[in-house]
Length: 478
Image 1 (cartoon, rainbow, N blue to C red):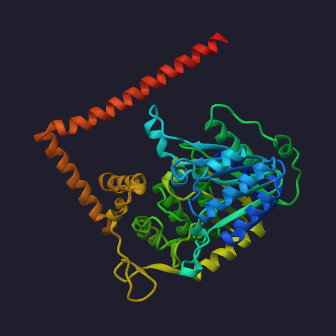
Image 2 (cartoon, helix red, strand yellow):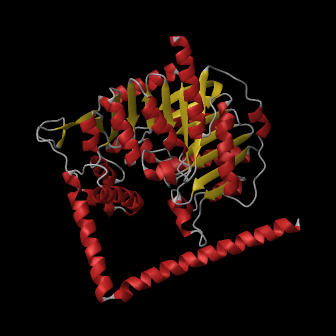
Image 3 (cartoon, one colour):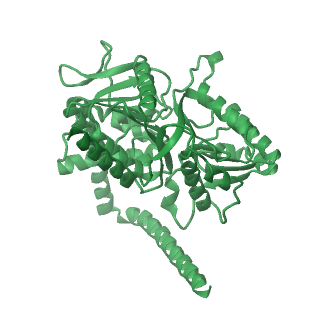
């Protein structure tokens, strides 16, 4: 009976994961975990150099620096050698490289280059979503999925005392490569007027099982929430351990509650986040979320190095995730992301070892005697001013989401508030009172921006309606 119950539990879990992610579990792969740029970049370079049919790269940031230019030259060289090379980059993430003309050598060499999700007058809000993926597919036979972009930050600058960023990626060989390639193809088609020919379509279709690792390649697009549903499911299914590393943690309230419930149920839940970040306000915002997690038994650690950029999870010594998705609303519901989830004890063990190594370079956050959040290092205390998050324009959307959660908790009473959120509530209260005063004494000052936004939105809707009608007319004519 126990064996039958275990089999049934596994069957139910498999179906649940498939429905949550829309991604089937692909058997028969070889997967290697690659730690930091010192392992990822050389593996990428070797695969690109050995490409004979095709190279497909989908990248959030290609920095206008030595590392970015180096990989651009590698791609151009393979294109000149007759390899079909396609580059899909995020228009905002690669804005500096675009302005500097760094992609011109690629197009001159025959590389087809497309920008993902350019701003459109007809859909002004759509440009807020980012193509945050980091995916490289070579010859339809090998794929790399990671948290690393292409930039000097991941290599560091030892000569000037700058350590490299901490990050994680994976290299995949086997049938799961075709799933990664299909995710690229879908976004590629969405980013251009017509799909280009692919030199390796037949090659990817002939990939044979080469190993024993079961892999699920999860591609997320705006509002899809594939990975969000999966991570909620993992938090519910974990029985012993759930160890998370995240670069920009601002988990939605439902996910934070799932972590708290798991910890209360005896699961060893640990969260590793940066203490300092390339977006300085992120650590500040993350800290406002610590107290409810700590009270439930979740252990929280802050990385002592310059930046930990990895996005990984490992549960119960058998399930693991590596990819581009951060635990915040922008990644989980707003961006194009790609992650690999693995059901393999050896891979999970490797990630557990990496996690424990990282903890040795981290500081644990504890609840003090007065129920205040403190560092485990004596005589040091962290301050949690929420308003610091608003100082970054790049963080405006994430900040608004977190602020909305705080205000919602105050109005709806669905969770206890922390004293560190008092400043945010006071700020919102003063802002609303100021708006009320302006609306009462100078209504035209509010009417003008409302009129502009309404006009822009109205134009966009009319444009979209005309475009749909024209497309329907053309389809009817055929």
